[in-house]
Amino acid sequence: MTAKRRLAIIGCGMMGREHMRNIALVSDTELVAIADPYAGSREEARALALSLGQHPEFYDTGAALMEEASPDAVIIASPNHTHFDVLGQVMPHEVAILVEKPLCTTVAHAREIAQRAAAYPPLFWVGLEYRFMPPVTRFVERVHGGETGDVRMLYVREHRFPFLPKVGDWNRFNRNTGGTLVEKCCHFFDLMRHTLQDEPVRIFASGGQDVNHLDERYDGEVPDILDNAFVTVDFARGARAVLDLCMFAEGAEQQEEIYALGARGRLDVAIPAAEVTWSPRDRSGPLVEKVETPRDALAAGDHHGATYFQLRHFLDALDTGGPPQLTAFDGLRSVQMGAAAQQSIASGQPVALDFTDNGDELA
Image (cartoon, rainbow, N blue to C red; front, side, top):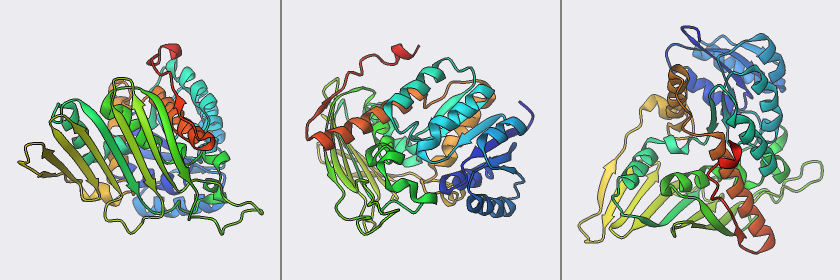
């Protein structure tokens, strides 16, 4: 590596531009190249780069970028359904990679990438950044510290706004996203595994498209993405987790709420309140801990500072040669769980999972 880390971004839509703003907050880091096939996205990114004091070269394709720019690391923030092909362009160059969630839109593609990443010499990191929201990080630290005792129940609620418009309206159809429970909720399935430090054995889900996008048409097609769901996940050591998703609840005070319950009491975290609350069973609570996030990190994106803190951890691993905190195996598991939830809704039946391998088959 050179004295300045040389970063590139493939895909400069909404998430790519969030990465640009966060890169601008990190010293000794230079954004040297951006690739996107859409001229409008490139022009928006060019204007943002100018305002941030960045001077990247722009390319129509990731392949052209990789041939000419020679970055130390590449952030892949292109549409979900392009990840598999873009990774195929980038991995032969053996540079460090941070690929946005979901790793891929199908289990088959995610498994293939995870197998390739297991033998990939440079750093390979999957952008499941919700772990890095400071209040969520603190919540998980306290759970892992034993505050609740063994967690028996974990509850994740996201009540939020509908999917935003994207270039080419790609996010309106399951074939491009993997389905809402892959596209949006892989974050939460990863948080379940991370918090419980366990693997799921069964998923049962109910959901539908009841409010959003029903009056939209794209080349005569009606969008088919879910806008609400309940997902119940049974874990190997007996814990149960629930995801409660509603995407027509933008008026809710808290967008995300997570609860962990064990024999000693309940611990919960709320975003954007940024509060971790302990409610012991002896009723001596609730005791509230406020977890602050730096204002510049909050202002740089829409994920409560998570993109910034993930970037710092990614760059630390790049500098030291350390391992990724979020591996391709984690990315595969989150896709598998989302796909199983989508399958359960389609079939009306629970889906059994055999995740006892712990990645051995990818070695």
